[in-house]
Length: 419
Image (tube, rainbow, N blue to C red; front, side, top):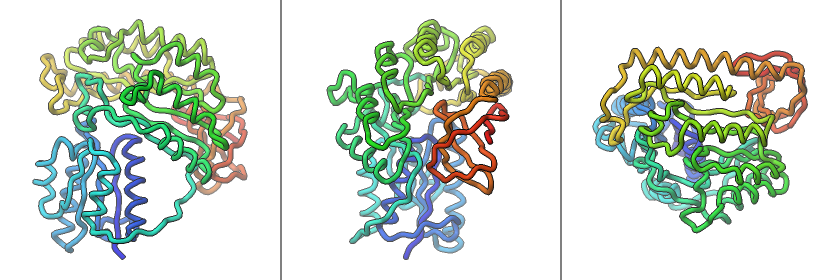
């Protein structure tokens, strides 16, 4: 029996695809191992959104090549975004250890078929998959928005929605097998169904999944603020299983920078959306993505981002310094910000956000919350509340998959602690 290992970089869609590759390799008769040196095949699922992940991938490819040269294995297959945009660099670093590259804009089914052919699989076996407490289910791939800094439309291709029947069948199968929480995924999930002729595909999909018998919780990622309407929010309020968490990437609080980013909305429109969420979902958590140090970002622009963070009081912000991506308009813009200034703004904004996150989390102290247990280590159980906050529960008899009530007794800016 041959051995395999999968290494995943990047987003939740990559995590989903890696799991599908894992299921395929197990059905091909391969055995999963933890160590590179024990593997005959290593599949690298890559991310090109930031340069750091790109460099990590190339470094890993180089280490696998050295191992291959030393012991004759493993060989590697690279898939995902970097395979779409850095083919020659990957081949140059990996040399003979690279046996295939599957592009990120190819469908997952096509890539698994290519893997089956590559490995000369003649028969497959049915595998019994472990129960998942929560599961990712992509409903749309690719992106049509072409923000000036983003490589996703190049690496992942244009938007391609999955058939509604296929999605609902996958959801029902997961829930029948014990999944408690479904997380629907899309680069711009609000666009679901447009290419299939649906006018209100996203909210209708949420409504359909919400009706799934046995499902306890429903989430989705990621919404594009320009496509989020009041009517969608009003229909969301009627859903019984939808979690009270909104991830709404703002990227900047400056209208000048938002325009340069080609985001398609203004600071004022974003604030109006946030106010609507607060009005209709008063107990919801709100998280966001922010880029600092974008080309042309002045001190005034950066301070406008800070003031937006202070106004909204995000529960969490995923903050990153701008990273040049090849073949994007922002990469050749004038007024590039130097790395030292980017790092200064990054640390400053993280400090502000951490203080806000601590305040938001400490609000839960003394309150009783419902926690879906995702893992247990020793006497500690780890899970999440509907607002997507991580809770560590001490000394409670619980099993993975249980939804338990616990009183929050302490909090830091990352976790809540219950008893």
